Amino acid sequence: MLEEGKTKFKLLFNVYHQNSDDGNQVFDNSGKEEANVVEPMLFVEHQITEDTAINAHFVFDFWTAASDTKLDGATGASGPGRGGQSRISGNIGVRKEIGDWELSGGVGFSSEYDYRSFNGSIGIQRSMAKDNFTIGLSLQYYKDEVMLFEDLSNPPTATISEFLPRDIFAASLTASQILTRKDIAQFGLTYVNANKNLESTASSVLVGGVRQAEVLPETRNRYALSSTWVHAFDDTFAMNASYRYYFDQWDLDAHTIRLAFLKEINDDEDFFEVALRYHNQSSVEYYADSFATAEEYMTSDSDLEDFSSYELSTMLTSHYDTQTIYGIDFDEMVWNNGITAAKRSNGLIYAYVQSSIGFQF
Image (cartoon, rainbow, N blue to C red; front, side, top):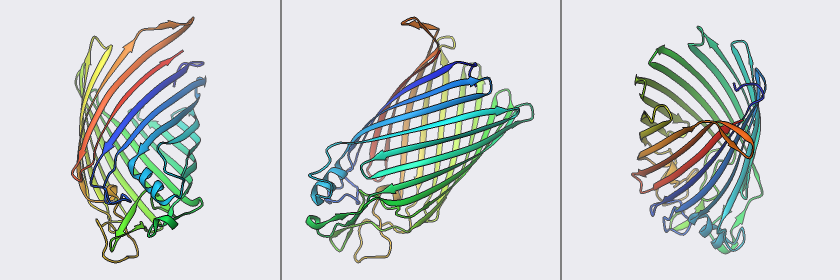
């Protein structure tokens, strides 16, 4: 918790690019998966009383995607084609401490041209053993709506649906334990249940040489187990090692390993982090590059096929003393700058640059 009456702001800015010529789900058979995203985000937290805080975050994305533009332009379902798209989303929440307990809750929304969502969350957390052990449970519910292409076999007469319902429920159990003065262990268990209209608007399949909309089951149960070990080698150098195992109802399973090193520089004013991430997954039961004949369920989405990915990222964090701007004293100013680059074995490459500045007053 912040000091009573204090307010913390953080402005984060992401620029993302991806490219590939191997996307079997792309409508015009080009495989082109190019996308560019610009994403500003604002986070705010205000300490109302010693044990109660409110928080909010807002996102306004802008992007262009080659597959979306060609799909919409070819069908005419959304006009002559979408050269650029946008999304606005936000969330408002509250946190309250009661002794060793912390309660939290929030509501949020998201809206773009073919998707909109209203969601809510609640959480409870307790510290024990003189704050050396913490356990928490969070629940989230998403009431979503999505527009889907219904018939792509004859592009001039292709049709798009009205908004269709989709429901998602998620539950997460987390625990952390301080092991020694230099070691912390964290564990997590996540369950997600998604129902109704789980297809993607931009994904299609090739059936006997003719493009059709993908077809997926109405339910998907997803599970993830995670663990993290944080170790300080000394007062200026630390390591973060994590492993995550994921599996779901569609027979996809995945293993993700991440190893990061954090080094203090400039007398506790700056920190430099470098991280490596490896991910390997199998394909879902219903995936194929193309289909000879129509099947009950079909997808060629490159996110659902088997692949391995390798990711390298760096981050520099800088701290500044109290600054006075326009007569306002800003405390604990923090400036982060990072870059991440990755490559998948199925041809997709991506990279993003992230910069953020945070302060409180």
